Image (cartoon, rainbow, N blue to C red; front, top):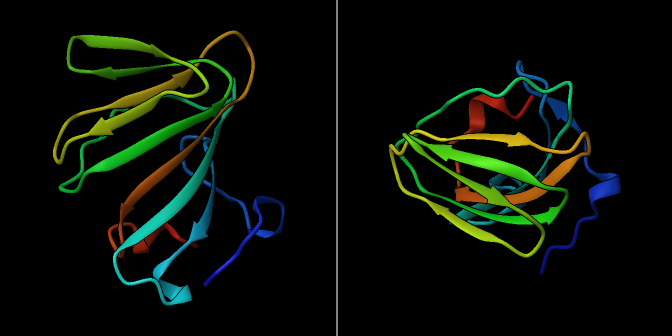
Length: 115
């Protein structure tokens, strides 16, 4: 079993101003999936991305928008979202508050950005 706390995990800032903490990672010995904690603030710049792996997102706090193509949905705490491989997506916060969410991806997909 592995246990971590958000407050004890190093925060990394992305080039677009998002804050991310790797809560569970393959470096800890997990074989298949990694869990990240994201914080998006007013200072974050939304950026559309697409990756060859799926994402599962669970919203913890705040309100935001997830956009994929021409579709935009408002998200709030308790929402779970699946983003398919290669699906273009963009996440931004609303209402001048932080948007926090968990994002689970296959292990090793984002090794280059772990810092």
